[in-house]
Length: 593
Image 1 (cartoon, rainbow, N blue to C red):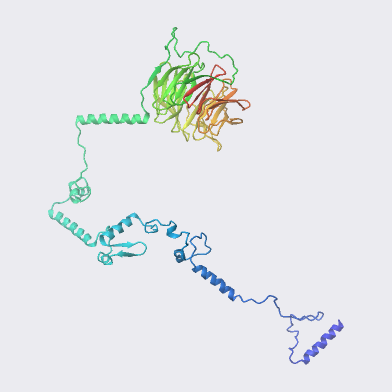
Image 2 (cartoon, rainbow, N blue to C red; image 1 turned 180 degrees about the vertical axis):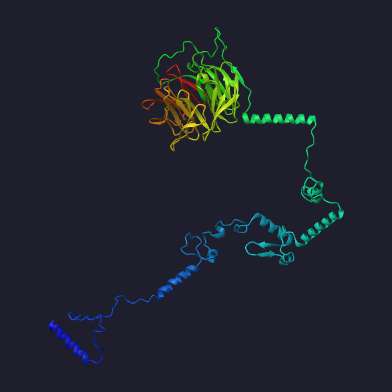
C-alpha cells in the first residue's frame, strides 16, 4: 500500500507541472468519480455500438407510399374482405381494366335487371313517386330524389312556385277564400237570426244549409217514429228468431235423434229385455291370463272407432263410439252382432260412459253436445251443451249420485250438471289447457283430471279448488288414465311413450320403481287399462299393437298385432279373465282370447 501511495504522489506532482491539466479537486467540491485513497484509478471510456448505423428515412417514405397507393387504388370487386377503410369514391368506382376475353363480368355476368342494364332500388315512397310522376306530366318538372333540385321545365317551375299536383296553387286559395266570404255576406244579408244550437246540430236544416258542400250534405239522421201494431209484431218475431238462432250457435249443433234396433226382438219369451244380463254370467276364476288369438271381429262403423266400453259388471254387451257420428252396441256372448245403433250426433263421437247399472249411457261428440241415452229403447233422455267440445264425460260412481254428470271441455273447464234438472251445478276452472280425463279416487270423494297443460290436478268433489297440483318440467300430456283394481294406483299414459304410476294416497306421489315402456303412443290418446285381478297392464299403441306388461316386474309380457292403423282403445272383459276387446282407427272392434 505504501508503494501505491508513493506512485500516486508522484503522479500528482507531474500533474502540477502540466499547465494544461485542470486543477485537482478540493475537499470542498469532491469528485464523485474519484477513487478513495485505497482504490485503484478508474478510467471512463466512451460508449460504442457494434450495430451498423441505419438510415430509416427511406423506410418511412416506402411505408407511407404503400399506404397512399392502397388508399387510392380501386377495390377488386371479387374481394370480400378489405383491410382498410375505403373511401366513398373507391367503393363506387367503376370496374377498371380490360374485360376478360372469356369470363363475363358486370352486366354480362347477370347483373342486368332491366332491359337497359342494371337499375338500383331507390328508397322512395309510392305516394311521393306518384306525386312527382303526375307533376311531371302536368307541369313538365319534377323533384330529383338524388339531389335537392328539380329536373324538366325550369321556367315552368319558377312560374308555378314549384307546386305539385297535390298542392293548391296560390290563386286557387285566394279564389276559395273569396267564395267563402261571399257566402257569409249572403247569409248575413238574409237578416234571419240563426240559432247557435241549431247551427251546431248536424241534424238541423240550418247546419245542412251552412255545410251544404260537406260530404254529408242533404242527409238527415233518421228518427224512428211510433211503430204500428203490425210492425211491432213483426219486430218481436224477428228478435225471437234471432235469439233462437244465436242460442243454437252457442249451445251446439242440433241433430235429429234416431235409433235402429238390429236384433230379432226386444224382449224374449219370458219378457226379459235384450239388455238383461244372462243369469249364468259369473266369474269362473279370479286368475287372469294374457289372450293369444283373435276369436271375433265386429265391423259396422264406416270410420274409425274412438272408444269402447263393456257393459258394467257382466260384459255381455260392448258399446262403441265411432267417428262416423254413430254409437253402436254389440252382443258379446251369443250372436256377436250389432244390437242397436244410436244416431244423435252431427260429428264424430269422442267419448262414451255407462251408468252403474248399464241402463243408460252418456255420449260426447265434436258437435259440442253431450247426450244421455236410454240403452234399451235408444231414446235421448237429455242433451247438455256449453258451446264447447266435450273431451271426456263421466257419471259420479256413487249409487246415490248417478244423476251427476262431469264433463271435461275444450275451454279448460270441468263442468258439473244435475241430469234431473239440466242445470250446471259447479264449474272447476283451474286448468290451462283442454281437459282430457276425469278419474274418481278415494271412495269417489275426489277426482283426478289431466289436461293438455301437462299437469295433473286433484279436486274434492263439489269444491272447485285444487287440493293437489302435479306438474314437473319432465312431464308430458297424459290423455288416458286408469285406476288399478285395488284403487291404490293410477296408471297414466304419458305421451313420451311410457306409462307412469301415481299413488292415490294423500300425497299422490309418482312411483319411480314402476314404469311401463316399449310402445309408441306419441300423439295418440291410446287407452291404458288393467286386468280385473290387477296382475297385468295393457295399452294400445300408434302402430296397431296391443301391449301387455306384468304389474310386478314391469316387463313386457306379450304384444299382439291388432289393427292396421292406431289401436286407440283396449278393455279387459270384467268376467271372462282371458278375453280382451280392442278398437282402432280402421273401424274394427276385435275380441281376443
